[in-house]
Image 1 (cartoon, rainbow over the protein chains, first blue to last red):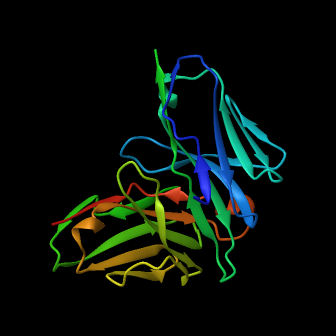
Image 2 (cartoon, chains in turn blue, yellow):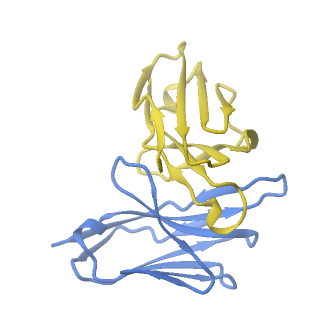
Image 3 (cartoon, chains in turn cyan, orange):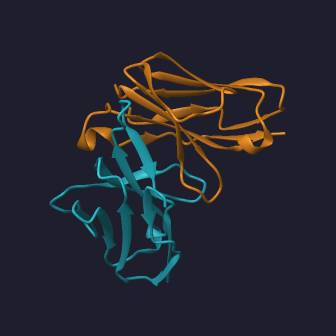
Length: 113
Length: 116
């Protein structure tokens, strides 16, 4: 089982739809959580950090449930420009020190006119 | 300056060549990272430098050798690579390796490496 698992996708949605991505992590020592987006042949870019209380940034809402080890991303009123791969990212501190960053496999989103 | 730069953008090398990838940031970040990304796969962490010291080495083969000459620069020295090492190599930086939002990473555009 992978340490960070995401919906396999792809998701194909019409413009204006609401779409939800789910992510689970297996290591309870995980400490910080993020959603990144990656466009084709580009580098990943931070979309938003995920806080325990949940957070919203315009059309995007992220939630974290530490008890269930579950992270979600909701996109409302999808735009064509939202088409990308969405990566769930978890940081944890291994016993050997430092921080490890683990990426989920990503969920591809296609928004169509 | 809020970006991470990487050179070269593309690199083609033979299995006997020695080459280096370079990464630079001027955001005052004290943690820098190397990732490898194959097509349609997520980035895989290779190395982490924290305050110019190697803090994470994800059991990467010795044909990849990282170097952090100062807090703004990160190099990846390549020697005797195999064709399966062909991938996009991404550099990233973060404020440090503390908790929470300080650990989110800025990525460079990557170096697309082809090993013949």
